[in-house]
Image (tube, rainbow, N blue to C red; front, side, top):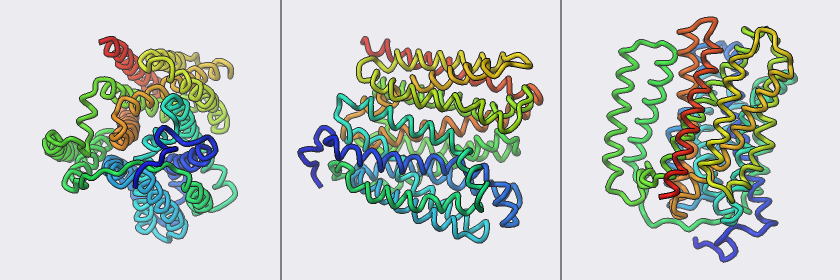
Length: 454
């Protein structure tokens, strides 16, 4: 299917609004669903008569399915068209949400969550690529800023949404509410742009190697963080290494590889991906540690903790669209470096809070963290998508999502490791560690300024 004339450089304003609506609805559902199950796990385990360890697979099955399928589905999007993959992913996600709501046992819920992860991967894998086709080149930063707001706010409000639903309804409604939203998004999806398909064939062996690599890698990282047998963790890491080496060797001679090695040869792209991984490690370290820090170290209650963390996503929601507009005029290396430096300062300031801080002392530090992350994220995402050739938008979009999920997975595992090593001081140490990763990310971001001058 060829690209229409009016889609060669973005969509006209009216159709653009419907297109961004379906993108926002779908990505919000997929991101929120990655978070809400954590809150409901105790309830689900109790009602389905499952052990806590067994119920963890309700979360892990979804996360694994998303991570191992992002790059294969992004590649398939370049072959079949991004709109087609997005529509299939949205339909699968909506159907799987209904299956989750109707599940009657832990095995059936886990299978439904795997299917839901497949749908979410379809949505996330081509989300960035679609934005590149929805917005004109001169407005790309603005579109990415809107998308960054949706992702950031969805991740932040996931626990709140889950708690609100569980307060008035059963856990099944956590998934059932996706069905009407998904149907609305499917109707609006008719406004999505068409991208030119590729004539190349899908690389099935590479997709299998990709699944083995990321699957074993995530399991090994998670196992190391939770103190599992080091022999088992070592075996999983070795399996990941073997699959990874085989995947890279297979990809090297290809012009449009599933694992976008061709894009990683572009210095700005590679530095932007590295910045993204380090920043999301930092973000996840802070997100997981802060509730423990506020409650166990500073003596705040559960409700107060939720309210005190609110300035973070609010500041991100305000700053991200503004930084998206700035990204159309100023280099991502500069905006990202400034944003991540502010993010690191906010995290360090939180870790240095006195034993009995005032509400305002906590609030401005949370605001600084959220504003700093918001200033960084939109320009960085624009650099990832904009530095790739237009015909490789799928590979760039898949790597954008993979970098975020890999960073979050490593961050979550590091939190578990910190809490095992440092006991009562773990939350403060974790915040300092998060600040360290943010500083590293800021440094990598600034390297793009040097590369830009060459």
